[in-house]
Length: 313
Image (cartoon, rainbow, N blue to C red; front, top):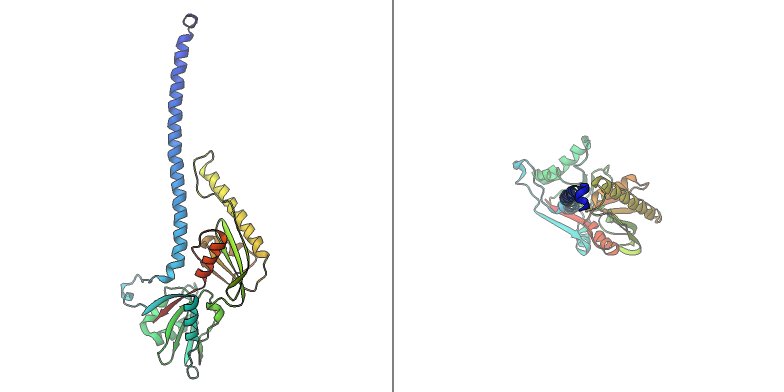
């Protein structure tokens, strides 16, 4: 009664109407925010899946037949291709290394089609291979750096892509045997192999393939943007900072070990960043798809790293 006399009843009704409208707008805003957050989360998850697939592709690309865009080259392919590791790799390596010929009857050629600058020596190397295997030499032009071994009788002609490649200035060599170093293909002597992901680090010290020391850890790194009180930009900034902190931990861990040879494996972009920003130069790098806890992931990475692709012309 008093509210009606003082005109407050209509005001209260209006307030209730406005509060209801505000509540409707709040629910609508929250629904829009949820949809946006879901979209951002889906984008982040898709990017992570893409990164994992790219790493997997990098690991398996040596196992796939590379097809030149020019259909005229489609008829050429290796007579046989095989991924060699473990006992099978050692057997094949010993077999190739045991070949003996007359003086200057076996040729070993290092071939790097990824070189941005080419000179006369590159053309001479290609001509050497083409003289030995014919038009199948074109199979080398779109591949990765490799070693080619052939003899003057045409009994042996193979392409080998070991995990550790010699220096690119290795000159073609004619001898009574193929000039191959065991440490390019097989785990020999003392070396360190580190597995690096955006959130994981594992380092093993090895003697002839057997691990004798180990260091590993995981770091807290945000996986994907989720519903919360901060924006995607802030989320990505936090994630980048966490990855930077993780890589700094990796640098410190690597500095604790002194080895003559260091190999880096893991996520391609992370490995490249670590190798580029560190005060060390790895002897070889490789993209591998190794998951799980640090110790088991390191075992997978070690097995994947020591793999050689064989191609028979």
